[in-house]
Image (cartoon, helix red, strand yellow):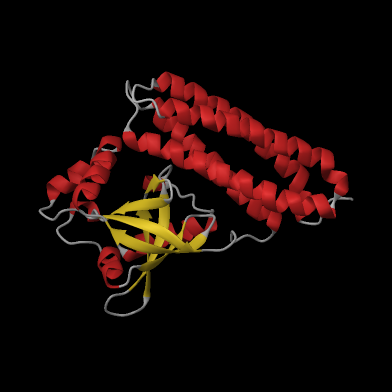
Length: 278
């Protein structure tokens, strides 16, 4: 892609917490910053990714072109990269997959989107698959703690909306990548709510005893969401899972979670930002 087009996508991504329009609307996209192999300068590129529970995967397709993309050649020289996902910016270690693992992951990607196979058919090079493992990070880049909470919540809303659409389009079977997408968001919700219980809620217990009824309700909602997450995980763990059943579980989770997130934002964002009247 021309650099000016890339820059438009980068600017829109950063201005809209990872959301972009045009050909990338609804796509899972990150900004990947590598160190130039020849120049040593940072080089940022919008790249599509696949969730993979504790890591994310990027595919160096270059649209099926004859040469590996610059970002891939850069990370071969220096595998420490920076990832922006729209909420968090973090350092990651890039690992190029090989052998059976690469073949399995690429086949999974092709099952989810035949476009990857079309790219491979256009070139004689074996299209690389790269895993990005987070090694360091920080809090969301937001103007306030309340804004950070809303960013995180909106990321879950967006991912679940993508999964809802993917399940609706899945046909008679449930693809391997879609199962991984579901498992990844389930794991993310578990980590987020566990951190809230042990961190933010525990701190507010000591600082704001008047919030006890609100926090008790939020903890109970966490338990209800956890039960729905467990149900979804059981369903997608069944090799013969019926997409209609998965769709019902996803809808139940979205309904419960949306009500929970909205209530939490209404109650806690004013507290976190110091604008409540307590």
